[in-house]
Length: 271
Image (tube, rainbow, N blue to C red; front, side, top):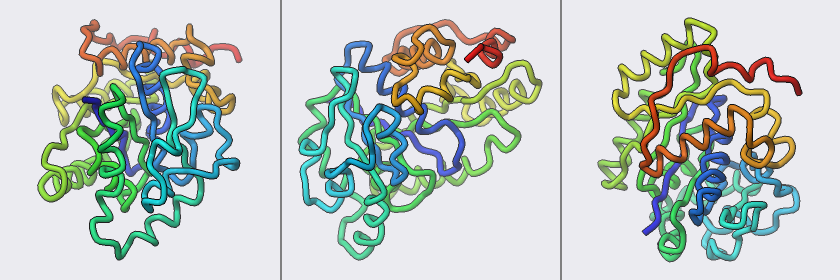
């Protein structure tokens, strides 16, 4: 049976969508069958894998309103074993239209029941908020992956997210667990990054992934070309780090990351 992982942080700018795209892509390139679900009305996950969100006629909006089965909206990507459930601005209306519907928080979970066995992994990109769309993503998930940016206010809002996860676990989805905490946008040339890494590890302990995602020109460029980093520049540091992260998720052993300047070498990489 496939694993459903929701990538979630209500704080914007943490690398949530970048991580959802690249985790899904790396798992697919490792030979796994993967469904990537865009549950953010901004549709950045959709455009980030090369699908024009403005041309989307069937989206996750129609799935949440139970107008279409999720298999009817799945779209092929450049990676053969990676399928996308796309989103666009129509999804903004879902929260309003579902507000008075009984069992509204389980719409996505019900939609995935028939498809879960057909995939090794289902990766859900949730919006940067704790509204009904995110609650649907958490109710449908087996686990939640939390990206945390290496900045001064790194843990700001994470406590609120943990409280929300616990509320979902206690009331709606008793099997929900924290898959892991992913440190992103790290610049190991600064003491701040090292301090934040240590602070997050002290807070989340063994839930923190060994892999740390660096600040990266290539990772920033890739979405504008509609490609995961593994297709845009497979030899870049960002691509190597997401490949390492995929191995961690698959349970493969990797050596612990060292905190040195090599993690930031790509910051000055020519474009």
